[in-house]
Image 1 (cartoon, one colour):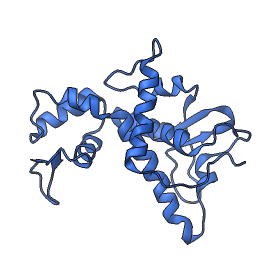
Image 2 (cartoon, helix red, strand yellow; image 1 turned 180 degrees about the vertical axis):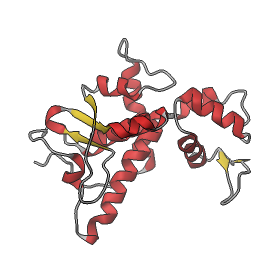
Image 3 (cartoon, one colour; image 1 turned 120 degrees about the horizontal axis):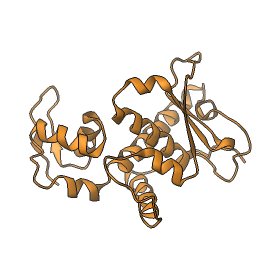
Image 4 (cartoon, one colour; image 1 turned 90 degrees about the vertical axis):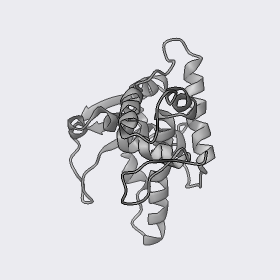
Length: 204
């Protein structure tokens, strides 16, 4: 069998459920209970995944932010990301953990392989699958970093229509303001008209 699972569609609810299940499993193990600001390396430790920061040279398609070596149970992250705000670092690591949970056949990690090389196909008919796989991993990362139960707790006393409150919430969660904004929009708590800076409460 391949080290990468065959492509399949995951709904948002399925992905969120897998992220929540992981958090709940961590909650039950001493010293692994998640805390916020979120430290995604704790999740990697829980899954017995090593995390290495190193220089990853670009390939013929451009820069590589991170990759997985399944045989080594290791995630490599490009050290260039260290120049970015910490929220980007957490998001990148959580994204790779999403690939591990959703796309890596963990029982068949019998070869050293760069994750993107394994799943990227050149045929135009498969490009949408690649985009879907990347979206799935990023959505998992968003749900892992900002689970609904934590957002419910942290929103208390804050006005989600005020940017100052959103920036404070992002800092408390350990995420970027962009990730927080997209998460709140996705779950229907806020609405920001295209091209506007005005924030309106959603219908949820």
